[in-house]
Length: 219
Image (cartoon, rainbow, N blue to C red; front, side):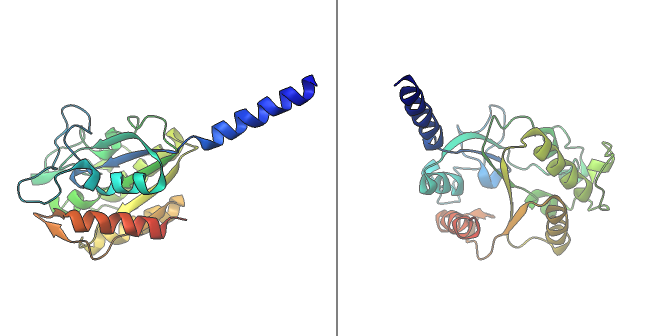
């Protein structure tokens, strides 16, 4: 009888663990921000007077999490930030770069990396492909910084499934770099298309389109 009870408890515990919703973290830029949902001191874009996204439930990540029945672990998104250390006007943006925020995602089951937009818009240097021994100077360029970032994410969160999202309408150097580096690390790259934007950022329709494309792309 004791064995039966212990077995029943084990099964119940296992089922309870399986029933826990997956935890999602986002590492992003302005496309993934919303006032009050990002760390204090970060610059949010949403809500914005020239964009019709006014509620957090309209953001791509909130729509996706709700559709899947998941829960938000952390949203570490900072408007205007680059993956590499070279920001707008060639300034050193290392302190806010994606590579500096790797450890701030909690304990997620799923990580969405949504970056590269500001690297493209700021004209950050692309650099050469490099997959080890990165220095700060190396990471001032996009390709080495992206490789360093993905390597760090995989090591810091070995149990998490990582997805990289690529914005539409970026310069081809950035697009191709994302494809090559993500393939090197075995990370699925989801290339967005036909995203409606207002003031350079996804509108309500654009946010829904991002969510729909993620749902379609992710098995």
